[in-house]
Length: 285
Image (tube, rainbow, N blue to C red; front, top):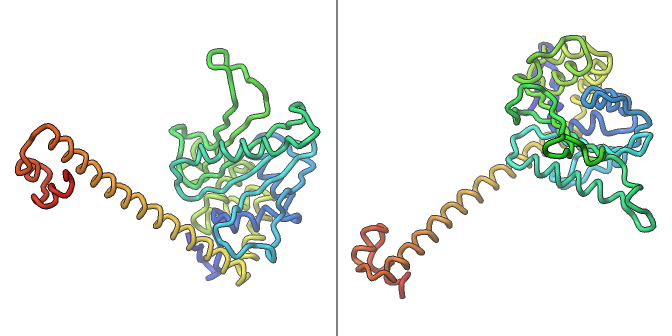
C-alpha cells in the first residue's frame, strides 16, 4: 500500500493509510469534508462538529504506533470516533467494542449522573471484506433478542467496507456515499477520478490528497507508519509460530508423563513420541 503513480508520473498516497486518513480528515480546516463523510456513512446530518483530537503535524509523535483515530462531538453532544483499518484484524469487532465502552464511560465525570451520558457511535472503515453480506455499511445496536426492541439509542457500531469488491456492488453511481467508498477504497488513479467526478466533497478531498502527497514530511511519516504496521504483523506472526511450537512441546511432554504413569515401557514411549530414551528419562524423572 505504498501509493499510486498517476498517468502524469505524480505520486499519490493511499487514503487507507491511517496517518494519511487523519491528515485528510482530522484537522480543523477539513471538518466540512469529515462532515460529508459522516453524513454518507450514517445517513444522518452531523452538524456542529468539534474535534476532540485535532491533527497537527508538528505534534505527531515519533512513536509510529500512536493511536490515529478521529474523535469528535456533534452539536447535540453525541460522540463519534472513526478508525481506519486497512489490514485484516481478527478481533477488530472486539477492539471496536472496547473503544466504544471506553469512550462512553469516559463521559461520566464526578458530579454528573448517568442521564448525562450521550449517544456514542463507533465507525470502522475496513479496507477488506469482513461480513458475508455484500452491503457496504453494517450498523449494530443493542436490541432485545426476540422483539428487537432497543435498550437505548446510545450504543451504535458501524462498519463500512471500502475495498473494490464491496464499493461497487449494488451502489448507484453519482452520489456521495458511493463516491466516498470508491475514493477511500481506490487502488488506481482512474477510480479516484471517477469518485471525484461524482461528488464535490470527494473532489476537494482528492485535490487535498494530491497536495499532501507531494509533501516530503507527510510522505516520510506515511511510509514510516506503514513500515511499523508491517513490522508489527511480522512480530505477531512470529509470536504465534513460537507459541504453537511451545504448545506442541508441552503436549508431547504431558503425553509422555501420562504414558509413563500408565506403566508403558519407556522404549515404547520413545518410539511413539519420536524422542530418544535420554529425552524420555529427562521428562519422567
